Image (cartoon, rainbow over the protein chains, first blue to last red):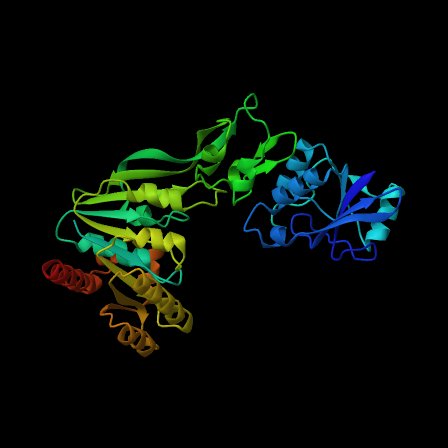
Length: 120
Length: 285
């Protein structure tokens, strides 16, 4: 299973970036092997004048992940991710490795709506 | 028709006060256009009646799923991320759309049509025989002011046109003052006021628009405004003194030239100076 984790750096020891649309990096992580398959620099999203969440959701869809692990998710990103059938888990904290651990133990909640407003 | 825009860099310096009182002392017919569409307030002072209102919309994309192949061209084109390519379908975020129409043009399948989304309104009415008021107003929650400003300016005007511009020096300001024969920059003689007056003056210089300056709450600090005027060779058109009675009349929605008639001469003189500048420019061209 491949998930997308928002991170401040490119490896498992990087901290989770709590933002989705304006995260520093998107890490595609293989949950079973516990390894980073791909690290995508989100400079475009960080610099987007608007619609960073929509752009991030597009990236997630293009990367073919089945779930997103992040701190929070705003309304536009949420509905775009729903359209792509990608599950959203919010509340990830600490390092990327720690977020994976939280995910495996079922400590992250699957979001049924945006948990923050746009531009939080 | 002569067009005078009343503008300022800093907000709350007295643009509307100058615009509505100037309109009241104009000898002939005048149209006041409220282009401060985020918070229009000219109508509070001029009380136009028999309002006719038209909606202002922008074209937003609607995707025909039967024709769409999810090639993603529209989403790649959109600088504003109003379209999201989610691989199996395109999602549209109307509130992010600026209405440029680009997606409909780049779609190779002709799958996108445009539908109107209302973002505001323009109303017009008569304050008296001589004064027409046209007001643009954005709907609550909307972010795009330019289409509403353009729709307001597209309305036909009678007599001299006075445009009440939005504050600042960015696009809404530029859209409101563009095409004016003279811009009246209203400032207060405070460090903030003078700083933003300088920015507005530089913007107008870059736009090649002539301008003069009115000092509101005149008194201490006037010298710093006069320095900006000298630097830009801009005439000082009027000084409205710092006076609590003015603020009180304003807060009741009253015109100064009616509530405090001793200030009427200030506005009559301002009107004369503006007319003189406009006439001189008319003869020179």
